[in-house]
Amino acid sequence: MAYLEKKDAVVVLSDGTVFYGKAIGDGGTATGEICFNTGTTGYQEIFTDPSYFGQIMVTTNAHIGNYGVVNDDSESNSIKISGLVCKNFSAIHSRPAATSDLLKHLQEQNLVILCDVDTRALVSHIRDNGAQNAIISTAVDDIEALKEQLSKVPSMKGLELASKVSTNEAYYYGNPDAQYKVAALDLGVKTNILKNLASRDVYIKVFPFNTPFEELKAFNPDGYFISNGPGDPEPLETVIATAREILNSSMPLFGICLGHQIIALAHNIETYKMHNGHRGINHPIKNLLTGKGEITSQNHGFAINKEQAERHDDIEITHVHLNDDTVAGMRIKSKPCFSVQYHPEAGPGPNDATYLFDEFIHLIKTNKEKVA
Ligand SMILES: NC(=O)CC[C@H](N)C(=O)O
Image (cartoon, rainbow, N blue to C red; front, side, top):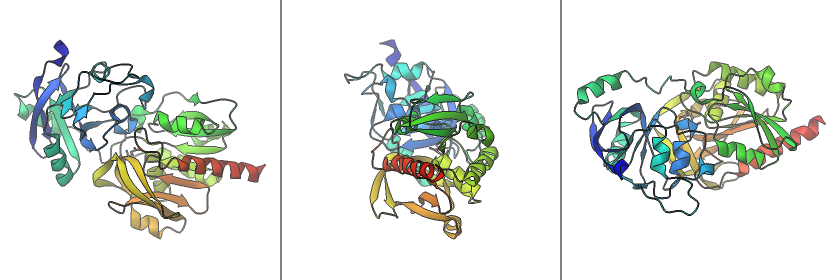
């Protein structure tokens, strides 16, 4: 099989460190912030998650591709990572439900795929030295030119990326006869979030990221949702302003990940870039309202300022990350609004946190009864 041919390839990090490996497929060059995901399964969902737009993904699971891909498992309509670095890439798969193989799927979008990289050493390096940009390439003979190209790649800090993955036109999801209607602001929404809402009797209108509040309101929704998405939340000024208007309307509002960061910024709580983000499917969270632990799916490189959140009169921190004590969830005391930094929809990951969708429906229901 010709496509299994391997070409020499390199990973060059911004700090000058070089790792060697092989490329499969056509090879080429790709740039972006390098990050790693520790999930043992779920590569298809990860590669299609719009929040990873602009990032080169290093997978820590040693085998990628061995269970193929299934149409329904994608979190969006295309591959969103900008490149893949892995250890063993399996060109054959075994899974009765598979509809295609991963290599074909990735090659349809000319993704640069590196394998045979010492991913354990690479991940320890990124973990110890922090998030940074990288370039991956089959142009191994010209490392200096690659470094030059890499120096022009913008830093993730300050980068607005939601506009690159948001829908251009509003669209509908779910059953038009459903009991509840939600207006969702799409900053890079994962399909599994829409599935989770639709399966709870919600009809959703998904709007482009920069839609003004009046247009969202014209759908006459019972609640609002602000989605996950890529990039730094701070440059999204119009979205932050829209979040303020939603909050002022006192209608139910739920935010996930980037949406959570936007709701924090709408309360003048700052966000910061973490030394390394949280990306995996076994992140431990404590729900401070119930005292229960949750194992959660996560993918974020920014977080909200905890001291500012603690000091804010209208905010109650509801969830903390047990590895580093960062804010994992909050609620707004005076409004029917809450948000989480992690991914209750999983996709991939455990379902410990799907109760949050039920709580959103509960807010919607209670609010509806109040206004009826
Ligand atoms: N999954 C997300 O929504 C990520 C949010 C944001 N881009 C971050 O990296 O923190």
